[in-house]
Length: 258
Image (cartoon, rainbow, N blue to C red; front, side, top):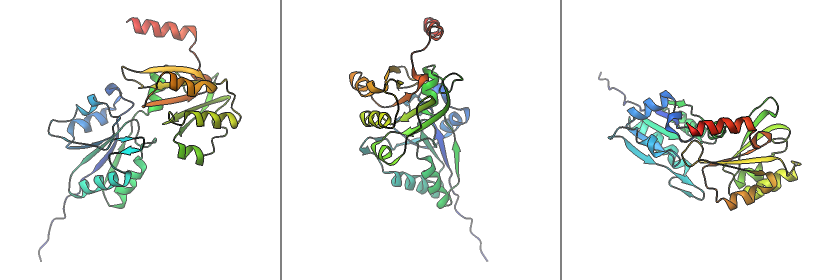
């Protein structure tokens, strides 16, 4: 009786690349990137992070933009599974954290359903990275003890109940909300949120071109239009998004001077 060795299965790592700055990668993420043979990456992964891969690594872009995707999510799932079933290890590199609006859950499910080993390496999410870079605490004993993350695309806006997510003692962080800013503003005000509540838009968080723009909720659409804000950006709503106090401003000025 002859025996045959079963074909080797590859493995998929779902790796968070963080908000942009390569220095914010976890050590594990950096090691996997530097050892990778195949990297399937999002469009928001900073080029300096991709440059950490070996010269021999195959880089596959599955960039997504509004109304224009390189590959559908089903096709991305199939790509990961097919590569692993062919015996290849794959680093699936995602901006932020794979499990916060990164569709990492869907990709992990597809791998498990196909019998492909999968491991998740967390990353600093866009909201956490943006808030830290802007020195804007999402929680604060005097201002907020609750934080909510929501997706701001029109589909999510119409299907989700946002009442109670923002207001006194709360911080609301909206991902992917630029295109629907006017509808978001109208919805939150209709749900009872005061039009004067502070809002901050953080664009290109942790990158050299980062901007922090502030207004009231009522002024959010005009702010985005006037400054031509583009993705990637997050919107922070709540008392913590207000102008920093004089002590914080002094600390920022000292840091900039160094």
